[in-house]
Image (tube, rainbow, N blue to C red):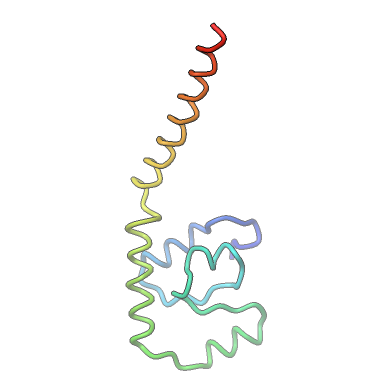
Amino acid sequence: HGHSGGGTNPSLLEAMAASAKIIAHKNPFNEAVLGDDANYFDKTESLTCIIDSTIDSQIWELRIQNNHLKIENIYNWQIIVNQYYHEFNQIFSSHTKINQEFL
């Protein structure tokens, strides 16, 4: 339950990678990561309703597959490292150009 601090919760990514059926707290961070591939609750009553409901197994299977694809294509360490590398290179490159203009 790390949603109150903001950002992407590592335990959520682990649940996605572990093929979990995810019932997540309804907040912008979880919704940005999961999209339509989870059930959401915002208070005890809505969580109880979700737990008591029967959700079609095909829906869960599709959600699990979609979450696996997100782990592979978005929340993948190599992809994230490459994105940081690209950003740092852009910053360094623009900083170097600025310094060269003043020399």
